[in-house]
Image 1 (cartoon, rainbow, N blue to C red):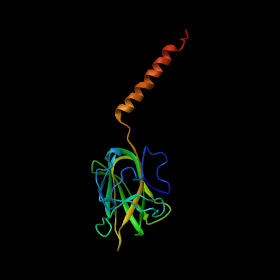
Image 2: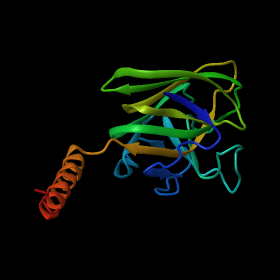
Image 3: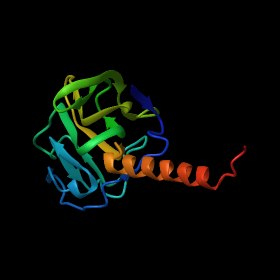
Image 4: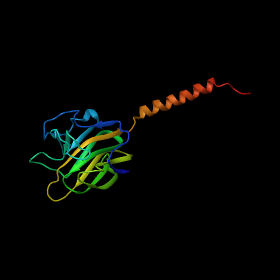
Length: 184
C-alpha cells in the first residue's frame, strides 16, 4: 500500500539520516550504504551546510543532482534484501506529482502517485508489500532538483528467524503440555 504522511513509518528497523557515511558534496552514491542495507541509482550526497531544507529534510541529505550539473527526474533506492516497508522524506523545488513504484526482482508490486514540493506530508513509501526497490519518477519544467532524508525501512524477516521462532514456540507448548497435570 502506498503511503504519504508527515511521519513516515511507525516503527522501522532501520533509519538512515545520511550522517552514517559522510561523503564529499556531489559524490555519486552507489554502494556506500550497502552495509546498512541499501544502494542507490541517480542519487548524490549533499552535506546541506548547517540548514534544513524544509519539512522533514535536514542536513546532511542526499539528492538527485550534482550542484551545477547532472539532475535526474528518476532515481531509486535498492535494498540489499527484500523489505516489508520503506519510506523517505522528499523535498523538491518542483511542485507537481511523482510516481512511486515498489518493485521485487524488477517486477512492479505496487505503485502510487503523490503531490511533491516542500511541506507537510513529505514522507513517501510503501507498507504491507514485499519489495527490493523503491523507484521514483517525476517531471516538470525547469529545476527538477530534489533532496531526500530519513530513509526508513524494515527488512522481511529471514526464514531462519521465522523457523527458530516457530520452533521455540512449538517447544514451549510441548514443554507446557508435558508439565500440565493429566486429568483422568
